[in-house]
Length: 329
Image (cartoon, rainbow, N blue to C red; front, side, top):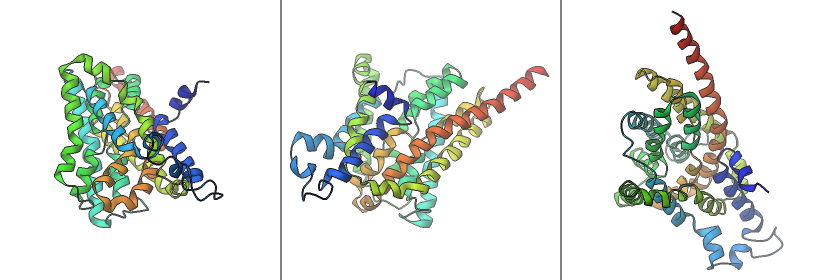
């Protein structure tokens, strides 16, 4: 039936589709069955493997995902790819942190234009490594593609927590920050010490995504998706424009051979939709905005997956014309 192939064709499909399915089931069958019964599926299967897998299991599965993803970060691939990866990662993360601090200090936890700092930082500081690699392969060279091994460090909730803490929006204990890093550090160390461990864990870097996406969706109601509306679209467009052009101009400043590749960071990672739940678990005061932040980030995932390739393609044409003029002169 080509179910998996179809899902993968959608922007952030492995994350977005299970999340939406979880939201649909929770909306119509969660607490009651279309209002016809007083109980729903979560009441029927409470305390069982069914509830653990489809309703309450997001955090432990996400932890396994972070560990597996970290094993794929290869620090042995030094040189130019390492340099480019550090530049792109720093640009992406620092932009998200600065914007989060500004919005948090001025507007507080409720944010601006219906966008909370939690959603803004979660969307801007995470990038879609797979989409970047595809764009780098099309418009850059092998060193540009190799940068994705470092760029993948910004996956997960750690940098979002740092930014929100710096902005004074969230109170994140240092032990929680360290706790978020430990699975990543341990996975990275083991993956670099033993190639077999990296190969063993590598499938988990993608296989786990639907399994933590569905229970995240099962905590949402479809009415929240409607609330994402315009703010979610604005968030996605802002992410592409701000970090896409940011990566491009930084590459231009550093005189990279293919500066258009820098725009490939103008995306939001599919797993970024898990960030609000992870942050809210660390600071319960953000639980009220975590739901809407999740759906806004979900909207940003889709919007950036469409806009970023268009921006990168446009900048490639601009740079190609410049290279042609230089070659002709």
